[in-house]
Image (tube, rainbow, N blue to C red; front, side, top):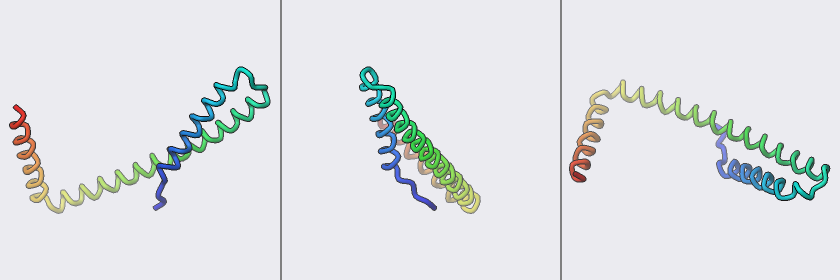
Length: 101
């Protein structure tokens, strides 16, 4: 599976924010040609950021579906162990909440 780099997405998003800030700062004294260049660069980076964010969303959804299938398989294959684990967690939560009151 292709591992996505969250740092690269973060850098892309920072670049978009930096470009937008730069456009806003230079808009008042920039010529039309300069603005077109800044807008074009920002648009490309925004498109790249959207694409990468979509990749991360799809990868996360696949991983969640896989984890859900594995969890369901374990619970069906080991019902008593699962019940024991849930009971242990419930007792721990009950004991911890009693301490606070």
